Image 1: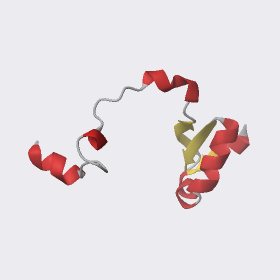
Image 2: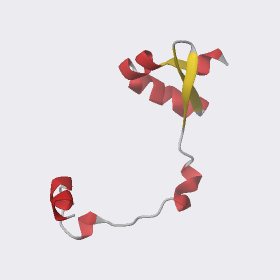
Image 3: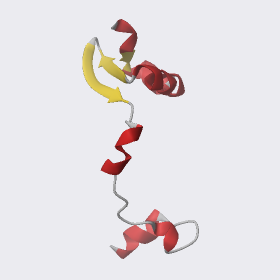
Image 4: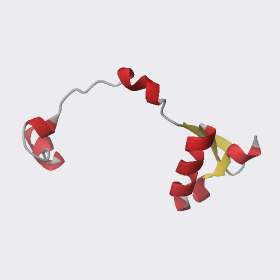
Length: 74
């Protein structure tokens, strides 16, 4: 149980290490001052049908569209 606890500061410093661990254990609990503040869980690859492409900007312009250009038009 305790190996799935991660200090917030340690998570920020060693993010790559904990992402690799997350793929193995599936879920990490992040703590701050000995209090759990949130959980991180791996994305279920079989849940791809839950995500929907709303807009594919690469079809409008090769390489996509810069976010600043999109925001300027809103």
